[in-house]
Amino acid sequence: DVHSFGVLIVELLTGQKPIRSTDSEEDKSLVGYFLEAMKENRLFDVLDARVLKEAREEEIITVAMLAKRCLNMIGKKRPTMKEVAFELAGIRASIGASIMQHNCDDIDFVAGHSTGLSEIGSSSAGSILNSVAFSVDADPLISNKW
Image 1 (tube, rainbow, N blue to C red):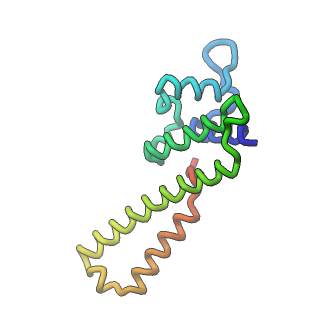
Image 2 (image 1 turned 120 degrees about the vertical axis):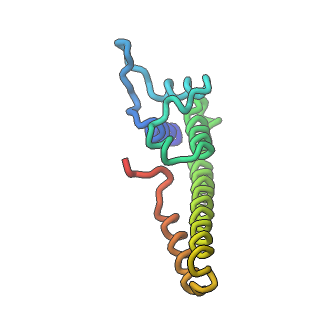
Image 3 (image 1 turned 90 degrees about the vertical axis):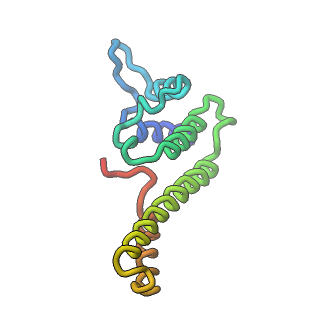
């Protein structure tokens, strides 16, 4: 269900389990901790270091806002899983476009300083761009390098 998916997103963003031990004797829910941090504008204080290292700020905020909407206590105000999937696809496409632009910039840099892109040949350039596009499709939303 959508709420459980929101919990999963929060686990991935924070790197913590759904029930976390605090300094006090009582356990505090990860969802409550996360939502409180968002309300107090402390989102980046509760995120896992790997997320901070691997993702851009705008991507993190977008995913965190999606998680918050999935965790809405009023079920009718939560997005449907279809809406969640659509939004995640948009985020992924944005990430892919960013990676593609970065890699194209690298290709232009290498081409401009060594042989020139025109000397590489259109089929080679096409193969490079297809490889980049394929690697973007293979990458998950949040890296599993952890």
